[in-house]
Length: 404
Ligand code: ZN
Image (tube, rainbow, N blue to C red):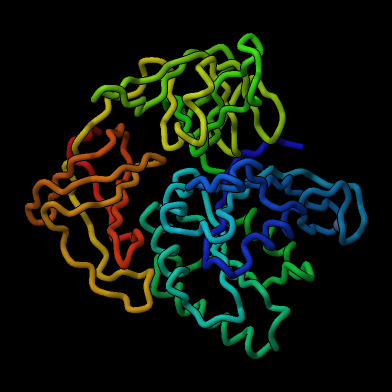
């Protein structure tokens, strides 16, 4: 089996069947770190890998099986391996989706056939994909086993109508049933045709950390301690065992951020030890750093690069902003008012996330002071604002400080 070469996110309304779809696609439930279930950590990003096969005798597509389930032939080809990313259960909050989108090369938008289209959350996730510039998308119309054919068609046309007004014009909509395994082969075929593995830039090595762990059991002797582990994905370039890397933004100590650096001790991808980490798939990097600094996702939202290759952190931003007309994630769809001075915003820059306080507004140009510094590398900055106690996407900004 090939190692994963692409990350495909599952997005959509919380109860529309994302987790059952992943199970049906891969034969597994999305994996999450066991301890996180007890602790309630903010970003519970799950993943499951699927080795995708095409039958050379009957052209049937399937995953994670060593013969064709359609004609039983063993004359099959592992076209590639995909990592599916899923934010399980109630964690389908915008904050998780926006962070996860930094790792997604493409997405499956999941819409249940037995619900009115669109649900506010569906619209908001669609907007998040658009603003994150994720263009390769397939729609799965789930739960078709619950309805008569006419109702499925009616819902299908509502989905078509929704996307005709969005940035997704020609994306396929595949009606499926995860429970009865109906049309999963066509969904896999659509993924193969519409979500190609991106041509990776030969740019500098970058790794986005979405998790971090101390994997040592309590009471481990110092000489047996394993170093800090970062979980995430390589975004560009590659990392090898033995290389010196740095992590930014670093850690806060007495009013200052110190960048962290260390050596890569081991690399894991799909549960296998590898020598080199390349883009696609969830990857774990173990560094020769004190494991306690990686506890409980403390280093989540950091960028890793080779030593002295990351830009300096910035503590303020000058953004040229583009705001949405309305809050799409709520039933009322209130109008998005312009950004005001002293307002508190939530900003996503790639995998980095920080609170920003607006210091100055001059038409579309907004100056923001950041609670936690970030590095700028051609990221679109996604902007969220609090509405009725939760963060809602309101638009994006482009930093004017950046050099291109
Ligand atoms: Zn076959």
